[in-house]
Length: 475
Image 1 (cartoon, rainbow, N blue to C red):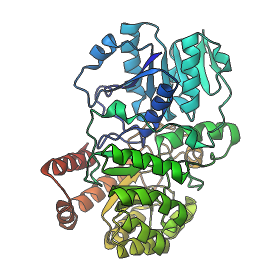
Image 2: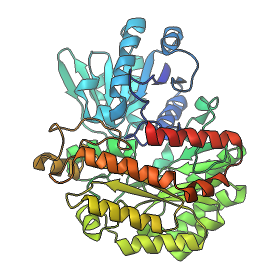
Image 3: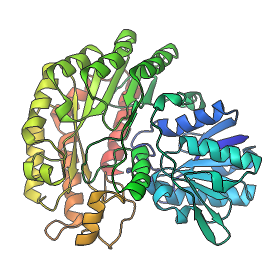
Image 4: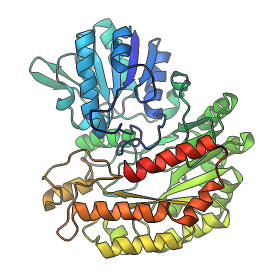
């Protein structure tokens, strides 16, 4: 069966949605490794796969659809992309009639009915890989949809919701992502400043209980579906270090020089980290990852330094211990400071993620204090966002019950710029102003600018980073 994965143009007046993290607009384009894994699985099953990215391709979207020979179109949809994806569906219906269209990702997993406007649309809920493979096979053979677990679909006026599919325990059964489908696109990451660059993932989900957290679009989709059935967060799944190392070896042979690991948490223990870092060090690949501050030890930092790690993304959110305890972060202000000192000792660059408004304990003073504390530390970068009450999180329930959501109900919002959260003492507008001013003070600080200038390998990389910064600050 011929299938095509589609990233359509942004809805009119909106910025393109970033579909890997899933909660912001695009600052710099990023390979969607989750979607490319589904594509690779379909290829392994014998299907012919195409991939269209409207924000990169020079070919107009309608022209692509009109010429396409695909018998099924697939979308990885996030909350911020739903309107764009439905607009693209309307074009597909006008040009291709009743061809099957499949939506997967957190957007359709939660807003299922919205994404089933007709009887030829299908929603894959939660973890999509095996469900998409079975659904496409069933559509190709005109089989019985009621046997495909993990999907929802419309039958006349009724929406059918089949039982959930169990999560994949052994991630090694999945093929490596189909990066050849995007080889015409030159991606870059301002934090790595080296190309060719790609992303990788070595695990799925996170076992910690932070009340607000959906670190990636795949995590969000898994969590929405699993919580609906079990009332708790889904378990974490790992790839074996041997499987990860094999993919790194393949990427090195293909000429890749930089990798961003997009695991919710990448660092778990020294043994696993050392095994994964061995091929990175061997091939001189520069890389970065996300980690918790309580995972950083002297030996961990040494391994990171020796294997060309160019950044560690630490989700600290606040330097206020009462707020950290309220949001169940399970870390303290002192642990944050200690972890940064250890990473600095080994010259591993640190990026701090600070999330404004995670608790009703947050005030203008606590935010200012967090900013002051963060600036005193020797970190490479600070990223400020505003918390959003994402559906299926504990924070959503709390915000809904206490009337902290402006308008009363969640609507998709770019957390890098806008807020739908309001406390009696701290309004949405207050938080948006603080966010903007904090970004300006950090990114336009002469010390930050001077440090960054010396890290670029070419004027092209500098220009791309400047463009990303402009989007980050001003949209």
